[in-house]
Amino acid sequence: MTASSKDPAPEDPPRAEAADPAEAVEPAAPPADGSPARIAADLRAALGPLVRRLRQFRPDGELTLSQTSALVRLDREGPATGSELAAGEGVRPQSMAAILAVLHERGLVVRESDPADGRRIVMSLSAAGREGLRGARREKSRRLTRAITEELTPEEQATLAAALPLLERITRRV
Image (cartoon, rainbow, N blue to C red; front, side, top):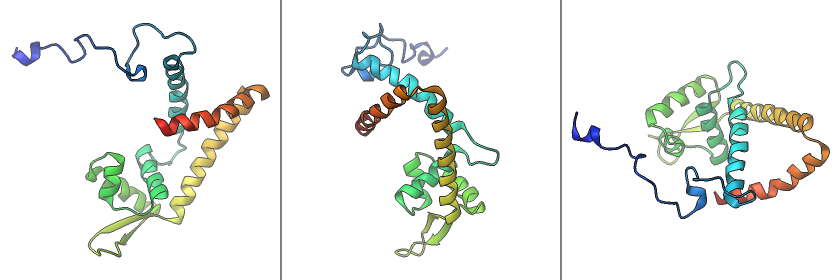
C-alpha cells in the first residue's frame, strides 16, 4: 500500500461549521421548524424531485437533456459557435459537436458561416427547433397544471400562487 492510499478520505476529517447555514452539507441536528435553514432544506427536498420528474419526462424520440439544454441556450442567448455552447453548458467541445450533429440531422438547428469571420460556424435554432421547444414546454406545463388541479384545493392553489413571487426572488439570489 502506498502512503497516499493510507491517507484518510477527504470526508473523514471533522468539518468546521459553515459560516452560512445554507452551505452546510448536512446539519448536525435538524434546524428548528420555520428557520431559514429548515425552509431551504424542505424547499430543496420538495422542488428537486419536481424538477427531475419534469426533466425526465420524454416521449419516444424526444431529445435528451443535453440536446434540450443546447436548444434552450440557443433560444435564450441566440446563435453561438459549438465552442461557445460547450463552454456555456460545461461540456467538452467534442461532446457538444456530437450533440449539435444530432440536432442538425433532425433539422432543429442550422449551421451558418459567421458574418464577422467566415471561418467560424455559428449554430442557431431552426423554426422546427423553436417549435419543438414550445411543444416540450407545453407538455410539461400541461402535466404540471394537471397535478396542481388534481392534487391541490382551491385554497392551496391560492397559497402556491402567492408563493411564486417569493420563489422568483430567491431564485434570482441563488
